[in-house]
Length: 108
Image (cartoon, rainbow, N blue to C red):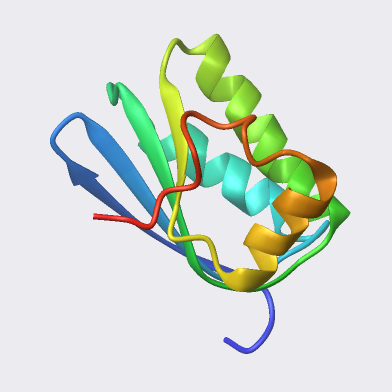
């Protein structure tokens, strides 16, 4: 898929990992939210692997914040792992690098 968002979900112990690739925009935000709802389950932490994100806009940033709020409401952590350069830049410019659990993580 050239446009849009692809999500691969896996369970790693008590952590759910959602590996995202493609674009995260207004149209794809609900996809991310639906995957969070479907796969968070009993996880104590959800990691969003953002290495494959090729484009993100303010609506995509909003989707990350919505999922963060859901995780917080559910009593679980949410970490951003291996953010692509475009994601990292957007988070730095908006001052949101510290809003998620811990610093941006380079991954395991």
